[in-house]
Length: 432
Image (cartoon, rainbow, N blue to C red; front, side, top):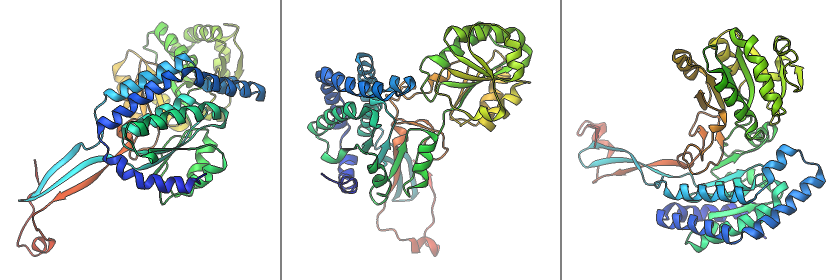
C-alpha cells in the first residue's frame, strides 16, 4: 500500500495532465459519478448504517450523528449539486488580462488549477462528494481525508467516485484517499507535492493544521455567526428568520450563535422570541438584563451568560442573547467576538443596513435573511469545498473560482529587456 508521500508525489505528476484535461472530460466524469452513486445507492446506504450504528454505540453527540447520515435525501442533494456543477462554465483558461506591452509583445493572465489540494474534513459523507466533484471540475488533484466516524461510507463513496473519474478519462492520480489519523501528519509534511490544505473541523483542529505544516492553509476555525435585530424591523419576520438560522441545521457552521437585540424593542420583542425558541427546544443564554426581560415567557431553558461566553460556537440548540444600543454597538460586538464568517442585520432602515454591511468584517454580510444561506450550493457554485474567513485568495463559500489561481503568458517576437533599459524601445501598455 502506497504511503501518503508516495500518493502525493504521484498526484503532483498527474496534476499537469489534470490541468490540461478538457472541460468535456471533466463534465463527463461528473455524469459518471452521478450515475455510479445512483446505481450503487443501496450499497452506500448499507455502509452508512454501519457508521450510524458505531456512532450510536460510541455515544456520539446527536449534532454529529446528523452529519453522519447519508440517505435518499442526501443522495438527491449531492446529485443535484453534480448537475449544477456540470452546467457551470469552465473555470479554467479564462483570460483575465490581455495587454500589449509593446508592439509584438503581448501579456495574458489566464486562470489555471491550484494543483494538488489536501482536504481534511469532518464526519459528513456528502462533503466527500462535493469536495471531490469541485476539484475535478476545477482541474485539481485532491487528496481526501474524511472523519473516522464515516469510514465505511467514505470508503465506498471514494471508490465509486474515483472509478467513475478514471473511466471518464481523467488520470489515476486525480483523487486519492487517506483513512487513518496518522496519515494527517504525513500529509502535512508533503510540502514538496501538495499546494494547498483545506481543513474543515473544530477550532483546535484547524489551529493544529496551521501550526504543523509549511503548506498554505485555507479555511476557517469557527462559525460564530450573529443576527442583529434593529429597532426598525418586521418583528414577525425577524422571529421567523432567527428560528430558521438556529434550528434549520443546528450543527452547521453558518447557524446563528449570538443574537443582538436593539434595546428599544427588547421589552416587547424578547418574550415573543423566547416563546418561539422554546417551541423549538432552544436554550437561551442571555445577559442578566435579557433574562429579566424574558421573565417566565415560554417554557424553554434559560441561563445567564458571561462576556467570555460570547466567543462560543455552540453547534447545538443554544443561542447567546444580549442587548445593544444601536447598529454601531452591534458592529463593535461582532467585530470583537465574531469569527468573520456570516452575520445578518434585520431592519427596514436601509441606512442602518448599509452601515452594517459596510462595517462588519465578515465573509458574508446579510440583510433581512437567515445566515444559513452561506453555502456554495445556495450561491449557485454547485457545492463548496469549505468556507474561508481569510482575506487572501478566496473568501466565503469556496467554489470553482476559489480553487483556481492564474499564470501569466507572455508572447514575443525576439524582444530583449536591454532594448527597454537603454531607451531603444519603450512600453506603451495597451489593454486589448
